[in-house]
Image 1 (cartoon, each protein chain N blue to C red):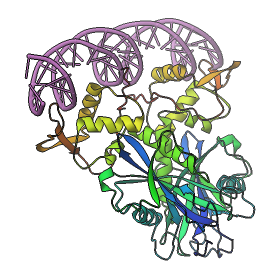
Image 2: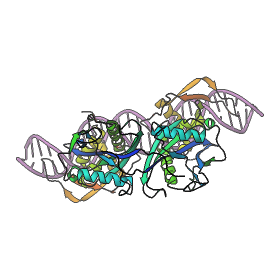
Image 3: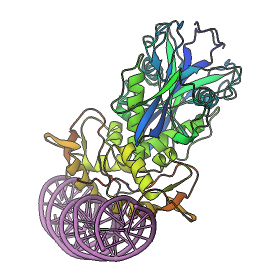
Image 4: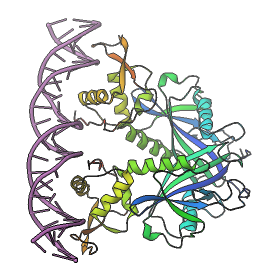
Length: 230
Length: 230
DNA sequence: TGAATAGTGTCTATAAGACATTATCCA
DNA sequence: TGGATAATGTCTTATAGACACTATTCA
């Protein structure tokens, strides 16, 4: 049996998030002025799967990511796959959507004429079904933030506990109680002290520097969520 | 810009689970004797996306599902997408994997010569990367069982609480404490009494019949897990 | 009446949330 | 020394888990 069927257009789209000015921001790329559909529009960065050069879907995503951000991804996760006859005017189109996180300082050599960061909450209007892909990404971030080390991949390798709280608050879109958060993070063994160092910036007491106890994503049995008033 | 690239082979594979003889069982289909790869092998049911007749990926999956089981799916969820150059000898192949649940009594007209049910724990050896897809499916079932109504889609529309406990135990692969489970299910408002009816089979006290309070999957904030010794 | 299964009540250890207190820096 | 921020301590309440107990059927 041979593959005689006409096959769909196959692309990947990436929701790239970073922490900028204290809030989650989304990377948009501008489509070519002579694109067949949505010329000049700002959309999620994405591209065709090149089966001659990409060995896997992940390769495709990392290539797209490198092309648009000039950097390496800190965290990459598959989100969902959308395939139907109507989402792209060019025909039956299948897109594998990914979530990528990276700390702001790892973004280098951005082509500022063709790419830009925008706040992700509220989510801007986007062509195709990109808005619902972003919504899926935010749901995933929020859900994983409540029981894993995911938001830490938006920070540098070493960070302070107040910084960690801030990035969790940005990911969860919710205020956290400092004391409870510290207790849970300690219980889970998520972070370890980065030896002896402390920050010296700012006015108040300097904070201890930490790093993740494991380089990969850690899942916890218990929840890190702890809402606060104020 | 036109899609000039050669595109991958695009298929779907479905992990179909049902509750049979008190345990989770997996549907396997036998490949054609003259198939180009893995002829005659038992694999996950799957098939090519037909862009001329399938309006969406879900359509593809439901078509495959109907063809193999003769029934309608009770619950369908996308699992993950695998795409690389090596998984299929025919070339760069992309497969969108799905999880499907249905109650045993809804399986009708199974072609018993070309399909069969096998226990999913432990998972049998399967060709391609189907074993890891099944592993992903079991992880998903287990994870969702702990905080959603997912396992109930393996039961008929009305069921007793002992039946519900049994299907959760099968999904979680873990014993549950009856009292705690009842309390949580009640707190979450997951089920409502199916008016007045009771079962009459068996020896002991007849059980109250229930149905899901909502026809769709319900997510709960809290966990339904409650391990028991025994 | 007793075996079997369904369903309820209750105790205890633990963990979450709230918030008060202490610690350490700089100006 | 006081303002600012970091870090710790402690109290209260909610809930998970464990398990004992009661209820209802049939043989």
